Structures are given as structure tokens and as C-alpha cells.
Length: 198
Image 1 (spheres, rainbow, N blue to C red):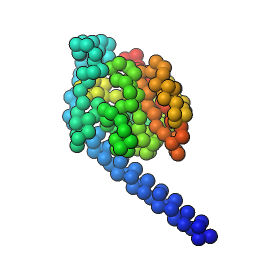
Image 2 (cartoon, one colour):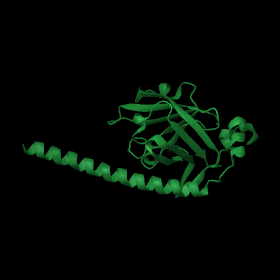
Image 3 (cartoon, rainbow, N blue to C red):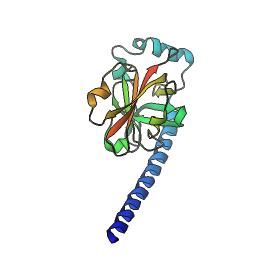
Image 4 (cartoon, rainbow, N blue to C red):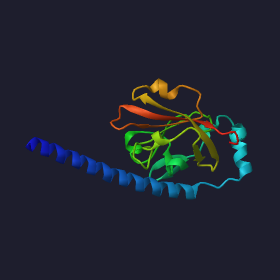
């Protein structure tokens, strides 16, 4: 009986810790998103159509390699991801590791201008925890640090094995978002296509 009580107390402690960590991460990401949004230039519709239809106009060689980052508190960000259906707008780190992932989504691979961006996020509810509730047709937008806005539509939602790196990175998707399932065994994976007006 004592063992059962200790196990329950331990579980309660872990749950409490996770709730506190999630709340801290939510607040930090919201503050960073607000600060980042204030530093991103506001582009006109004409400016935006230029990057969407002919990214080569913006750079001399590879637009992905010249995308600017904005550094806040020692961390470099490539832009903001917004998913209205689950009520989130979050900063996206330019690189990923587990420490950064606990604070905000991270660029796992690819580039928005090369139409192969993959973004990883933690499964906190106010991060990517509600990706599993998205439906085909839901809107996703990404605003890069130059102020260009990319519009996407969710086209496929899948669950991949946590070690299936090839499955995550293969395919011709304009944008992929993913997060761990509870327990971290699998990855909820959302595939998106750029919309016709983007």
C-alpha cells in the first residue's frame, strides 16, 4: 500500500512539474513571438507575390541560404508559424535541439523558399500538442523574417514511427509540421501544400 501511495505521489509530482514547464514555455514563446513580430517588416501584397512566384528575384543564387534570421536573447529565429484552427502563433528557431524545442518550434530541415520546410514542435498544448486535431483544408501561414507571408493548406495528417527519419523527410511537401505523441514513441505529422494564391 505504501508503495502505491509513493507511486501516486511521484506521478502527481511529475504531472505538476510538466504543467509548470508547459506554462513557462507558453509564456516565453508568446513573448518571443510578440517581440519577433515587432521586428519583422510589413510587406505589401505586391512584395509578397514577388517572393512567392519568383524567389530568384530576391537573391543572387540560393534564396534558402540568404534568408535572414533575427536574434533575440541569443537565439536565432527564421520567422513565425501561425495555425488559426488551434489558435497558435509561434516563433521558429533556425536550428533545432531538445533545449530549443522546449521553448519554441524549430526548423528541423529545409527552407520556406525551397518549398521543403520541416518544423518540429514540442507537444505542449500551446505549441504543437493540438496538431492531431487539424483537418484537411485548415490554414497555416509562415511569415519569414523579411516579412514575406507564405500560405498553406493542410492536406494530410499521419502518424509516423519516432525513428522513421526517411518517412519524415521524404515526399514532395511544401511544409511539414510534426510533434511527439504522448510518451514520445510516434510523431504526429502534418503535411501542407502552398495555396494557389501564395
